[in-house]
Image 1 (cartoon, rainbow over the protein chains, first blue to last red):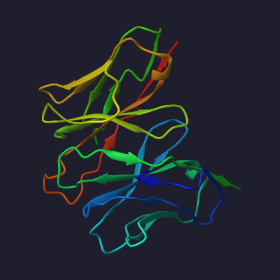
Image 2 (spheres, rainbow over the protein chains, first blue to last red):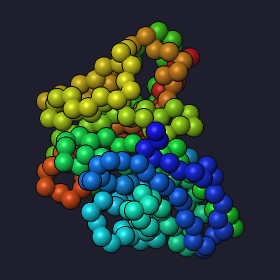
Image 3 (cartoon, each protein chain N blue to C red):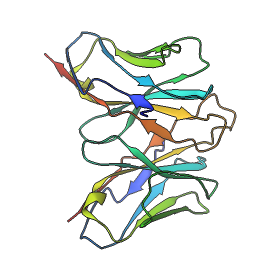
Image 4 (spheres, helix red, strand yellow):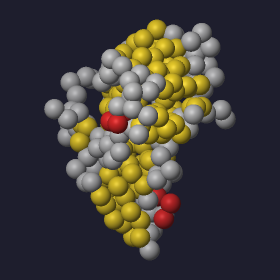
Length: 117
Length: 117
């Protein structure tokens, strides 16, 4: 079964508008972490935001916020005031077994966001 | 701040040749991960090392091997290259998850783009 599901292959948003990128996950672990990465056309993976399973408040980092709904197992990324430079592929990822060492990331299939004028 | 260094950035090989990809983690990071991202795909975990020992193994072909050296840099060796090995190979580094931090972000290198002809 898919551990990370991103159901939106592509999204369009107008400049200065807000956009929500969906991510649902599946795990039986109680302790896990959820990450969002941005991958522009140049290829690098840029860390955006993190949410721990025990964090009671939704994570925020500048224009990025994470809408964490634990019971629904969703961790949607909200980008406010979109900019042309936000056009990129966005990956949701999960790290399970936070108490172990070298816990790998499992990625979703990504959402390609295009910001328009 | 120092980032993860990967070399080479681009590599072109013929089928059945060998390739060696190098990764230099962020200073004091003790954990290294390798991921493979095929064209239009999400990154897939290959292998990880903690304190120079292999800690986890993912979908890494038997033709591939990797190790982490005493200075914590890591090398991914790929033999009998196939067309399907053409991909972007990321190295990421972090502190071990149980190092006391609430989470340990994996910092990604810029990637090595391998093309097999």
